[in-house]
Image 1 (cartoon, rainbow, N blue to C red):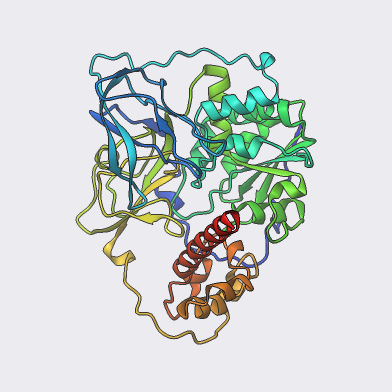
Image 2: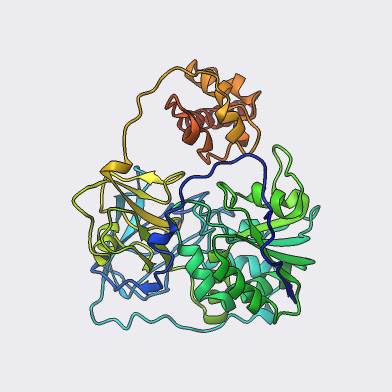
Length: 455
């Protein structure tokens, strides 16, 4: 059974946040198209949060599409699979979308390969909770909203906690991106099925699907499919506001609760999952398809043919852009992800990875270098921060290198949504300074832990 309210005059939301221009119309109407197979694929072993995978193949080895080519090395790690039939051409070090270099596997496509996976369903009846968790890890499934956190870790409920609600994130609040929107329109049965598969092992009371109100077609389609389920699934329209899709913000909007500082959604009995991730759960258990491809929005005012594309993991970004007609003459900047949290790219030859939600090409009139001025204490960043932090003060502390003092202002709670940087009239790169500070503080914590262990 499912419920959906008619559009209320006031949709559910959270406090603070910002309202950037959406630009969804560029690609929201574009049905998902499949990316043709290309000549070569590069697969970094560290595409997810946690320990990198360990290569199981060597140069010259033949592989099949869907075959495991790298295995998890710890609990917070996942397997990696070949996106094509082909031959391993190199096991080495390669450039990644994050701007660094990592160990990886390069596969040359077999032009005569069938490019079919062995579509054998997984027997759910034979799996207990531990078996389910192991299967998700072996399938290489991670969060497809952008963070790429291993899904099996999130699904592993500690003994002292329980999952009361499953919450699906269909907000896609980043400007330009529409991959989740198209996923909800074109794969509603798989999304609802994924919820039911997951709930076999979580035994939740209810599921929610939070969708921003600018996607009325997705709301309607999912509500109709959910209505056929005996498990209660409620589709909830949410206000169009950034960052509505952040876990803590969506929980506040839908349930009215607040995840305390330093705590996780599960501390409130909530497990949050992206709609694309839950679709991948269905496809693995129903068809035996591990995570070898994902839906990517290719968009922006400087791409000739915006599109939503089902792309094999490891496909060079250059090939995806060429499929969409190439960039225009006034292209100025390319990002993987959206404009708020996406990463600027220096090369077109980096691969699409599991966390690549979009390829965004901006034109020259949309990109300008801000001259940084001193903070004028206007308070706009404080009003924008969805976590009620004080970005202004943290920015001043970061500029002076007072990292420990930033802990007193809860800098580690910041999830780097960039709302503060977006509204800052002085052009201060606040979120970038917080990212640096958090990295320094984490390294310091690791050193201190190691020193205590040695002593």
